[in-house]
Image (cartoon, rainbow, N blue to C red; front, side, top):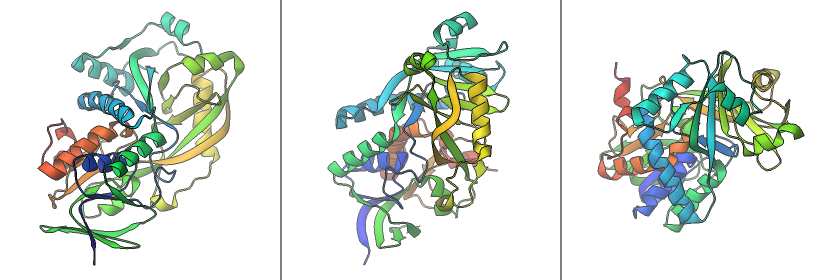
Length: 377
């Protein structure tokens, strides 16, 4: 006989753990299921840090959501006593006509943000550890930051547990079904029933949502850590998060933390992953070369030799815009999918939206641009 709940959450990564907490806070008898034991390194939400920024070149409609996300992360810190969000400046460099610069300035204009171009002499003075090009345009956000990703997931899981949520870890989902009476979820160990279902399966969303005619492309992404020379160590310790738009791709990095190493990665690119359970986690020359070229081209005093690496997955929609909506065929099923490598920062606000959609059928949050209807035709 199936074990029954009010709601089941499939996947307990960044958004799933937050959704479990959001539903539990509202008094819902909720179960969270994950094929591994979160926080873990097998999906998309790991690797120490994630950026949180208002400099949103991807789409200006994200700005109200990220504004709310900043507030929600601070509330989670107060609720759990954990340090999750560190404020840092954000620096962007690239051609003025490129998406990163032009899109950021357009979002800043539309939402009256404290984001602006800065002149070359100021860049050279304030950020001596950056190599800049004569044709670069520079944009600065004063109040961005980064999130401690594993700590964020654990904080949401702790809140959910405290509020009465149950979890089942290391329990892969075999299948699920839904009708007007409720949903059923069968795992490798058990069968569960509920009134509602929230699918937050990350890189496994394409498998869990096979019935939907929406392309979700999973890409393998490599993160690497590098040693910083003594001469530039102080600049990297106190410096900003940074993003460089280059002909070879868009690359980003973080300040030096802990052992004074820096983490960098490429936002663009990545090879397709047919099966997220069987992703290649080895580091190959093709992974190292673009990162090494970025380091040599854009940063002073960083050793291109990798001292640590991690592999994660980005799940992209065709437009690289998230999907947050009710299932088109099952109103008692809600979905967050296709976070496209930039969705973690929104986790608590997306969780609120999913809880709204699940319990009320609609949300007052500005999520219309994330709905399935944009794929029509």
